[in-house]
Length: 369
Image (tube, rainbow, N blue to C red):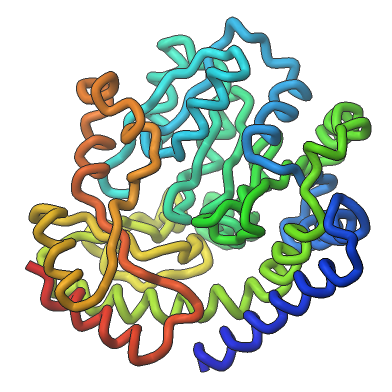
C-alpha cells in the first residue's frame, strides 16, 4: 500500500513540475496563487504569501508586528540555525532557550524565564512535529510566531474544565503569524521556500499591506509552487504512510534501551498521565511524523557505524540546529539541548520506503548497540 501510494504521488509531482516547464511559466504566477488558496484551505488561515525563503517570511512577520530592533526574540536551541542567523541579519537580538529533555521543546516555564531575562517575542519551532502546550504559551501575552515547518498537519485538542473535547485546532493557528518552511527536510517541501500565514483576518489586513508590493524576486516561483501544491494535496496519504512506518519503528524500540520523545498531549487538567504511560503510546493527530528521532544511551558514532554496516544511513537529528552552530557559546546555558544534539539520531522515514526497506530499518532499530 505504501509503495503504491508513493509511486502515484511521485508521478503527480513530476507531472506538475514538467507541465510548469513545458508552459515556460516557472516564475511567480498562477500556481503561486493556487498554492496560497490551497494553504488557506489546508491550514484554515485567513491569508498567506509564498516566499523564496523562511528568512523572508520572518522579515515580513516582524515588520507587520512593528517589532522594534532593540527588543529580544526568544528561540529554541534546537530550532534550525536559520532562526538565529535571520534574527541577527535583520538587526534583532536573540535569546536562545534550553529545552525539555523529554520532548525537545521549550516549555511555558522556560519561556517565562526567558521573558524575565528580556525576551519580548517567541519564535516557536515545533521540533520533530511535536506540539507544546500552545494554550499556555499564548496566555503569556507576548507575540508568538509559530514555525510549523515540521508540524504542519498536527492538531491540538482543546478540552474544557470537565475534560470534554471542545475542538481541535491546527498547528499554525495559535501564533500571530505562522511560517511553513518548504525546505528539503521540512515535512512539506518545494525544494526551498516558505509560506507566511496570518491565521486571523485582523493580522492578515496588517500583513497584506507589506506583502502586496513585494518584488517578484522574493515570491516563490511557480516551478517550486507546483511541487508544494502536490505535496499539500497528497499530505494525508503521505502522513498516513509515515504514521504506519513510525508506529512500526516505535513498537520495535519499546523493548530497547534507547528513548523516544514524548509526543502525546495531556488530555486535560483533570486527566493526567505519567511520562512512562505517555511514552509507550502510539501516535495520534497531535503530532506530525516528519522523521524518526531516537535519543541514544550509547555513542552516536557507535550507532552510526553499526547502522552503516547494515546499509542504513542515519544522521544527527539536530546537526543543523542553533546549538550545533553555537555549541561553544551555549554549552552552559542549554545543557539539555546540547545533550540531545550529541545523542539524538534520525533514522530514515519517508512515505516512499518500501516494505523491505522498512523491515530492514526496523530490524536494525531492534538490535542497536
